[in-house]
Image (tube, rainbow, N blue to C red; front, side, top):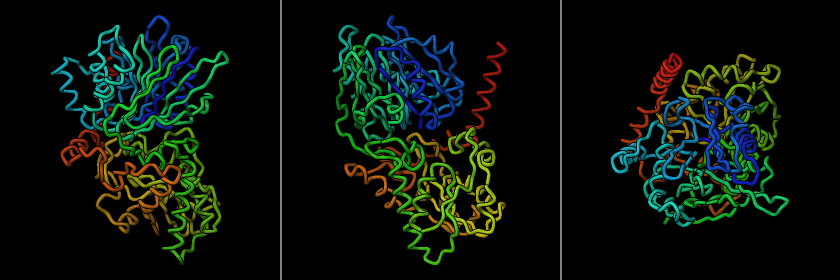
Length: 505
């Protein structure tokens, strides 16, 4: 669940892309990268592990000249955590192409093999994004250099759609031509396009994972890039677009609205903030209906995605809303952290209980979702240590019982607390006095209200139904071996050993 941005303008874009990545930082804290394209048709790249503010300094920014560029913040779901996996990626043939990608390719193993056997293309990392770049380059290479047109580019994207399975939103640059952006035919991953007019009348364009990147740079939202659509922006500011999929479907990821996206974003015409308020309405009404004799004294959110949800629940239940936890904003999101040990150790460093709001009270804690149960168990324990009499927990999302294969780090069903367990078993494991989950139908209605044109969301983590229809037990078993916490720990150890060898050299 990375963050991507691409910009084509008539002034240096390095600072604008940097600023856009800072407001997309919540989408990935593992690594960051920017590539710009200058007037001499040279790429300038900087990428490394770390937050945006740590990866780029003045000397890097001065070096990244050009009026066109793309940027990326990484949240690792495929590949290792090595700096070599940071995006964007680059190939020098044909033309010189660089690409950044948000999502996950489900047939990456097969595509990697085909690239080597059929096109003699070597993929140097374990990242599926580099595979995607090489397929795009392979398709672009079918056309003669002096004849590459918008129609050729759209044809290349169309052929890519026919080969690639999974979820992907991409931004790319082709030297001598322009900026390309495209979205998977199911529209699982999100992409929005905007424009702003300069004083001289020329138009500048931007594409990004979330609308907040457009807002802070003064771009007007044109629209969401449609599922299966490709957008091509030339160096002179011309904008071309075309549907490149024969049978596009609109199935955006439901979990974006629950957890990942910023509340001030509009995604597929849906206000994330309004959707979360409606989640609170639905869940508050469910509690009022099913817990008629509740003795809740106060409603307390688990910061900070759930704050808007909890405030609306407090209104519905006619109970006080209080900020019972103080958050250390300098600790990363624990769900995004790679590995159970890191997630567990981060919880107490991230949150501290305000004893005055817990002592002697029956508290309803509200969270956006419960994934592994790590955070929930510890926070309930913190509430009890702060003197709470009874601790109830409400989740604004249904039980997460199934792996995610489209770019969210939930690859192993055995790591999910709700997998194979009923409500009472989950309650006992996390230590709550009572537990309630949002109904899936209510969650879908809460999100869909702003855009009734969406007929189906990608909600496989809740119902186990994968919209690409290519996921079977064999693939899930492979994914579990590849991306469970033990495998990630081993990969991090290998990454560190490689770094030590590199430093010695």
